[in-house]
Amino acid sequence: MLGKDYPAQDCALARALEVVGERWTPLILRDAFYGVRRFSDFAAHLDIPRAVLSERLRHLVEAGVLERRPDPERPGRDAYELTPSGRELWPALHALMRWGVRFHATPGRTRRFVHAACDVALDERGLCTRCGAAPAPEDVLTFGPGRKPPREDAVSAALQAPRRLLQPLVLDRDPDEQSRTAPR
Amino acid sequence: MLGKDYPAQDCALARALEVVGERWTPLILRDAFYGVRRFSDFAAHLDIPRAVLSERLRHLVEAGVLERRPDPERPGRDAYELTPSGRELWPALHALMRWGVRFHATPGRTRRFVHAACDVALDERGLCTRCGAAPAPEDVLTFGPGRKPPREDAVSAALQAPRRLLQPLVLDRDPDEQSRTAPR
DNA sequence: AGAGCTAGGTTCGTTCAATGAACCGGTAGG
DNA sequence: CCTACCGGTTCATTGAACGAACCTAGCTCT
Image (cartoon, rainbow over all chains, first blue to last red):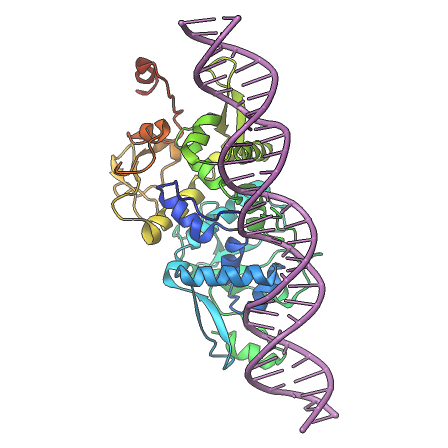
């Protein structure tokens, strides 16, 4: 990119872009909202060079958007998860997603978002079509697009099923470990 | 950046980022909402290499976000302005700005946004603190941060005064041409 | 004990976008 | 005719992105 900052701009948008505006960063954050927490799950789902992923995660941790902490599920390993300030990015991220859906997505292959409490979809403005509220990410259910051709990795497959945002994604060959953690 | 697209991602966010996610593009769009329409006004305000600005504008026009059309104020010259689809980016852009204000801006030096009809500020969620609506950009008044040190260019100076979003910015050495177009 | 596997990175050479200065053609004014 | 300005394009240089290869620590299998 040759320069990742915007020093001449005295503007909150420029400051925000210096934190979350780099290539790949919004997709990393999207995955974090979907529950991805592990380095190799990000790498597998994003097809991003590992050096770039490593640098982005470090930058996001430094900026207080992600936190790196020991993974309770897997002793000795760390996991990345959104901090409170990172979770506040949801409205911006979701707004950009909805714009992409409206103007640049292939119809019928878009991820769906549902207000968990009302069990109805969110509208174009991100508001629940029943109660009218703009739900926080932890009150949003999401499930993947139609599964036709692309992306055969395990993370993509796991993200097809309806899940709550921010709920940690657990991928394991041991099948009942999944069912132990998923219900709550 | 080496690669501006995200071909492996079957996701509306990836599609959106391919259109508006490149370096400088969000700042260009911000300026477009502030009323900037001319190549050299973008260049002066953003300190962006002209080759990059040229390429970004071309890309945005191709994607249907901006439209290039003859400038009625200056025969023979063109101007760039937001299309309907471009104007729909306001919620996403404003959400990211507000996040920047909350977590990464220098306090007291932030631009202010006001619901024109109610004459009160917008809150953290972008809603009018009086009527509770999320105003469309044409109903938003904005004015610049405190003017202390930075940016001495004419565009920055003109954007200090309260202005309605999307209202074309007219810069002219002829002072009463400004006052002819500004009032409405 | 050794072999192999996995997670989570780092290293490194190559490619290509970003940068900024210089250049260029068309119009407008004097 | 000369000059300025606008809206770009050209070009050499720089440095980020890419992806393949490598590395280390901790299991698991035999």
